[in-house]
Length: 255
Image (cartoon, rainbow, N blue to C red; front, top):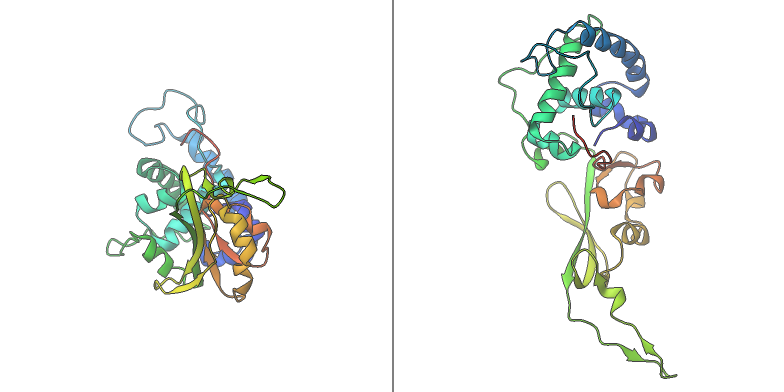
């Protein structure tokens, strides 16, 4: 969800997501990286702290995300304070991976005098749903998605020259394995329907439909939109808009 590469494209949202500007984060990361490495080298136990270390630090299974992104994940958690399950949903990690990542980074943060570390209070409520996450980001105006509806298989027709026109292929959805019509919808965080598109053939990609409607151009400068992984690439079309997409899983192993 929140990665360094994405923040490079949208540096103006860093403060609201992780509590510091991108410039401040870059400066802080240099110190954090050095401290974290020292903590690992001096640690006598495994990553979970349950067993005595048998190998040198860093010799085990590699992390799915690099250290910079794991620090961003942790800073976001400290600010939003989600459940491990919900954070895992956004980062495509299971609950155990999230907990291990957080504990490792938090241990280093707690040892840094330059970081005002304050563990979340016991009575602080964890965000446990997507709706609660959205409440934590009041700038989100639209949640965009596309839906498909099954239709009868269209019949091919002949043109005036007698050539058969294939009217079935455009409506065949490879995802649904059936012939469909697709519509794009956008709702507000309160559930109000803000936009619906005209129906298009089911083979139309969600990203293509979004580009055709140019819906995101209607966002004001202080408004944001949330989209799923099917819209990967749309940020390049709207570099000045605040768009939140899950980080795509590109590495097979977790850690």
